[in-house]
Image 1 (cartoon, rainbow, N blue to C red):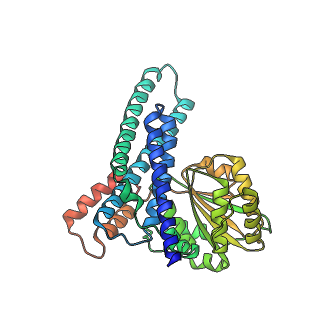
Image 2: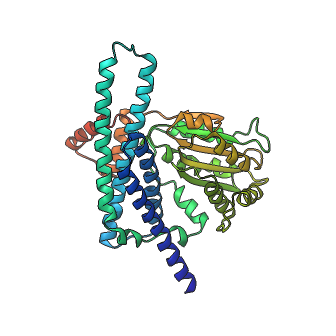
Length: 368
């Protein structure tokens, strides 16, 4: 009974902190004027909301009001991804145009494009803030959502997040290629950590592909002693990441928080073990941070690998990827097949519905 009370208290404290973080970010978003600063806060917001959603979905939510709030959180997560994707795409396009355009010709058009970009991104951020305000009005419900992390062991959590239940269409060749990279230890030696990156824009299915690779039978056999999955997100807090990896490696909670102590325990836990670590959704562009983490991970046995997913080739480069796989958009036929499976399941749709589905797929542009 005392244990149940402690877990319940811990759950409330966890979500209470998340709500406090959301309130703080909402306040900062309202105070910030520059687009660049607000985008950094939106990326932090995306990480927090994703963590809440993933954690809550481990438990069964039955209350109708709580279900509705969770649905709003998911929609907000989708909106945030759209804003980040649009911002990153336009920023990259601007960088490329600077390198190739003629200054006189583009003097006026670039200014006009900037006005359109600022207007649109400001509108998108305003919509996100409005939705966030609506969610935070139900703060008490958010704080009392069922919370899963403290009710299951790290091994069970790891299994949930690597479950091979998602549909993969048009990615079999890519999956086999990455599995081959992970299970090939040619040129590897003890203390040499290989990093493999899956790079692509949001919505292409990087995480889904990584999950299927993670759960492949060859991968399971090769890394039979230890496979770990860590969602990183925008915040690359070295100590927190090492602590999470240590919990996954030892199947036990870690109560220490001093960085050097965590690092020593992590090195001991990984020593002489061939492991696979998936770092999902990495944004870190600080080479020193990665070098410090890499040093702690480099004590594994020959053949140990890190598989990361990221939207940025820059991140892949900074993290010293041995091999980078750039994901491409799916073909129209693959997109249509995937859409059909999600929309209609085993039912055979009529011709009219398939025509509508085809039009939707065309607008998706290979991102399904």
